[in-house]
Image 1 (cartoon, one colour):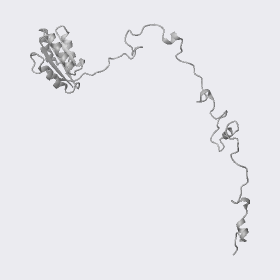
Image 2 (image 1 turned 90 degrees about the horizontal axis):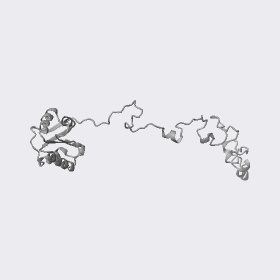
Image 3 (image 1 turned 180 degrees about the vertical axis):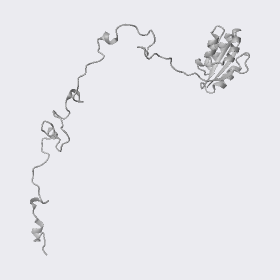
Length: 220
């Protein structure tokens, strides 16, 4: 909802002066309207959102040579209704014949103009597209290039870890070429071929028990 405030003035010059004062008070230009005898009064009244019964009386006064100033008081500036009324109090407005010169009306929807979705250039302004060759045709550029099926996600189709592929989840995940991946960067064997020992001591003997003459296992 917005508040529409109207004031009538003796002539166009007086109305123009109050328009400037309202603008300097913080009202946007699209929130201020002036209607003079030279305008399409009926259409301007409709755009000003003035109720029909009040618009008829105001139109009669405008036809007599008067000028009307209309303000749409919304959220800008803050306290717009109070600021507009205070500005009008010292503006030299004349009687309009209305008991109430302020109206609460429903704000119109602010939307973009409709476009034709089936038009080949529905995002361009009418007349802005001229017939002729396209930019790609002028420069010899192809819009689409033929694509070949690729078997690898890597650039060029090369493998990251060699010329083979890893087969599957096998216990010995080897490369297709038969070599382990570790041999590509470590020339030494990973596991030694020594026989398993049954003792943690070198040689596998019991030197301390032999020195003391103690048997390792006692018999009862």
